[in-house]
Image 1 (spheres, rainbow, N blue to C red):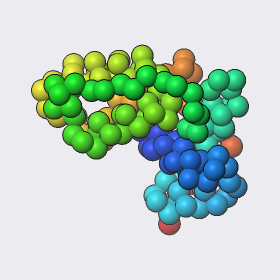
Image 2 (image 1 turned 90 degrees about the vertical axis):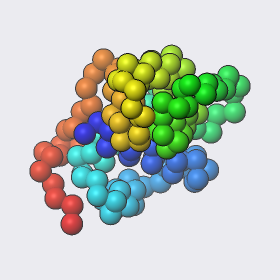
Image 3 (image 1 turned 180 degrees about the vertical axis):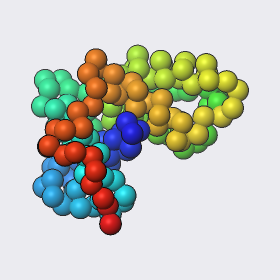
Length: 153
Protein backbone atom coordinates (compact mmCIF):
# COMPACT_ATOMS: atom_id res chain seq x y z
CA UNK A 1 0.00 0.00 0.00
CA UNK A 2 2.85 2.41 0.73
CA UNK A 3 4.06 2.07 -2.84
CA UNK A 4 0.67 3.27 -4.10
CA UNK A 5 0.89 6.26 -1.76
CA UNK A 6 4.37 6.91 -3.13
CA UNK A 7 2.93 6.88 -6.67
CA UNK A 8 0.48 9.58 -5.62
CA UNK A 9 3.23 11.64 -3.98
CA UNK A 10 5.22 11.35 -7.20
CA UNK A 11 2.14 12.49 -9.13
CA UNK A 12 1.79 15.49 -6.79
CA UNK A 13 5.41 16.50 -7.29
CA UNK A 14 5.05 16.28 -11.05
CA UNK A 15 1.79 18.23 -10.83
CA UNK A 16 3.53 20.91 -8.77
CA UNK A 17 6.34 21.19 -11.31
CA UNK A 18 4.00 21.47 -14.27
CA UNK A 19 1.78 24.08 -12.56
CA UNK A 20 4.46 26.61 -11.59
CA UNK A 21 4.59 25.52 -7.95
CA UNK A 22 0.81 25.60 -7.43
CA UNK A 23 -0.69 22.42 -6.08
CA UNK A 24 -4.29 23.37 -6.90
CA UNK A 25 -7.54 22.33 -5.27
CA UNK A 26 -7.64 18.97 -3.54
CA UNK A 27 -11.00 18.09 -5.11
CA UNK A 28 -9.70 18.32 -8.70
CA UNK A 29 -6.55 16.38 -7.91
CA UNK A 30 -8.54 13.77 -6.02
CA UNK A 31 -10.93 13.31 -8.94
CA UNK A 32 -8.04 12.76 -11.34
CA UNK A 33 -6.36 10.30 -8.99
CA UNK A 34 -9.62 8.38 -8.45
CA UNK A 35 -9.93 8.04 -12.22
CA UNK A 36 -6.48 6.41 -12.14
CA UNK A 37 -7.72 3.79 -9.66
CA UNK A 38 -6.56 5.18 -6.30
CA UNK A 39 -8.79 5.04 -3.22
CA UNK A 40 -9.83 7.97 -1.04
CA UNK A 41 -7.69 6.69 1.82
CA UNK A 42 -4.60 6.43 -0.39
CA UNK A 43 -5.18 9.89 -1.83
CA UNK A 44 -5.76 11.56 1.52
CA UNK A 45 -2.74 9.85 3.08
CA UNK A 46 -0.45 10.90 0.25
CA UNK A 47 -1.85 14.42 0.10
CA UNK A 48 -1.52 14.87 3.85
CA UNK A 49 2.05 13.58 3.88
CA UNK A 50 2.91 15.78 0.91
CA UNK A 51 1.49 18.93 2.51
CA UNK A 52 3.34 18.21 5.77
CA UNK A 53 6.61 17.86 3.87
CA UNK A 54 5.93 21.05 1.91
CA UNK A 55 5.40 22.98 5.14
CA UNK A 56 8.56 21.78 6.85
CA UNK A 57 11.40 24.24 6.90
CA UNK A 58 13.82 22.86 4.36
CA UNK A 59 11.47 19.95 3.63
CA UNK A 60 12.45 17.12 1.31
CA UNK A 61 9.82 17.95 -1.27
CA UNK A 62 11.12 20.96 -3.14
CA UNK A 63 10.93 20.16 -6.86
CA UNK A 64 11.54 23.71 -8.10
CA UNK A 65 14.62 24.36 -6.01
CA UNK A 66 17.56 25.71 -7.96
CA UNK A 67 20.11 25.08 -5.22
CA UNK A 68 23.18 23.20 -6.34
CA UNK A 69 23.14 19.54 -5.59
CA UNK A 70 25.63 16.91 -6.65
CA UNK A 71 24.42 14.68 -9.42
CA UNK A 72 24.60 10.97 -8.67
CA UNK A 73 25.71 8.94 -11.66
CA UNK A 74 25.03 5.24 -11.47
CA UNK A 75 27.82 2.90 -12.53
CA UNK A 76 27.40 0.45 -15.38
CA UNK A 77 27.19 -2.39 -12.85
CA UNK A 78 24.43 -0.58 -10.95
CA UNK A 79 22.53 0.21 -14.15
CA UNK A 80 22.64 -3.46 -15.16
CA UNK A 81 20.88 -4.35 -11.90
CA UNK A 82 17.82 -2.16 -12.67
CA UNK A 83 15.38 -1.94 -15.52
CA UNK A 84 15.46 1.49 -17.19
CA UNK A 85 12.09 2.38 -15.61
CA UNK A 86 13.28 1.44 -12.12
CA UNK A 87 16.55 3.36 -12.45
CA UNK A 88 14.73 6.38 -13.88
CA UNK A 89 12.20 6.35 -11.06
CA UNK A 90 14.96 6.19 -8.44
CA UNK A 91 16.91 9.03 -10.04
CA UNK A 92 13.79 11.20 -10.29
CA UNK A 93 13.01 10.57 -6.63
CA UNK A 94 16.46 11.90 -5.78
CA UNK A 95 16.06 14.84 -8.14
CA UNK A 96 12.65 15.72 -6.69
CA UNK A 97 14.14 15.35 -3.20
CA UNK A 98 11.67 12.70 -2.13
CA UNK A 99 14.74 10.83 -0.92
CA UNK A 100 18.07 12.07 0.36
CA UNK A 101 21.41 11.09 -1.21
CA UNK A 102 21.98 8.75 1.75
CA UNK A 103 18.58 7.10 1.20
CA UNK A 104 19.42 6.76 -2.51
CA UNK A 105 22.57 4.84 -1.58
CA UNK A 106 20.67 2.62 0.88
CA UNK A 107 18.05 1.83 -1.77
CA UNK A 108 20.74 0.86 -4.29
CA UNK A 109 22.44 -1.29 -1.62
CA UNK A 110 19.13 -2.93 -0.68
CA UNK A 111 18.40 -3.69 -4.33
CA UNK A 112 21.76 -5.46 -4.66
CA UNK A 113 21.02 -7.52 -1.56
CA UNK A 114 17.81 -8.84 -3.15
CA UNK A 115 19.74 -11.02 -5.58
CA UNK A 116 20.82 -11.14 -9.17
CA UNK A 117 17.49 -10.49 -10.87
CA UNK A 118 16.92 -7.08 -12.37
CA UNK A 119 14.91 -4.77 -10.17
CA UNK A 120 11.83 -3.62 -12.06
CA UNK A 121 9.61 -0.61 -11.40
CA UNK A 122 7.07 -2.33 -9.10
CA UNK A 123 9.84 -3.74 -6.89
CA UNK A 124 11.63 -0.37 -6.91
CA UNK A 125 8.44 1.33 -5.69
CA UNK A 126 8.16 -1.12 -2.80
CA UNK A 127 11.79 -0.61 -1.77
CA UNK A 128 11.69 3.18 -2.18
CA UNK A 129 8.41 3.61 -0.31
CA UNK A 130 9.98 2.06 2.77
CA UNK A 131 12.62 4.80 2.75
CA UNK A 132 10.33 7.70 1.88
CA UNK A 133 7.94 6.90 4.71
CA UNK A 134 10.58 5.76 7.22
CA UNK A 135 10.57 8.95 9.27
CA UNK A 136 9.79 6.90 12.34
CA UNK A 137 6.04 7.18 12.02
CA UNK A 138 3.69 5.16 9.90
CA UNK A 139 1.56 6.69 7.20
CA UNK A 140 -1.66 7.96 8.76
CA UNK A 141 -4.55 6.48 6.81
CA UNK A 142 -7.12 8.38 8.87
CA UNK A 143 -5.83 11.86 8.13
CA UNK A 144 -9.24 12.94 6.81
CA UNK A 145 -11.36 10.45 8.78
CA UNK A 146 -11.59 7.92 5.99
CA UNK A 147 -12.13 4.31 6.99
CA UNK A 148 -10.50 2.67 3.94
CA UNK A 149 -13.63 0.91 2.70
CA UNK A 150 -14.27 3.37 -0.11
CA UNK A 151 -15.00 2.01 -3.58
CA UNK A 152 -13.67 3.57 -6.75
CA UNK A 153 -16.07 3.33 -9.65
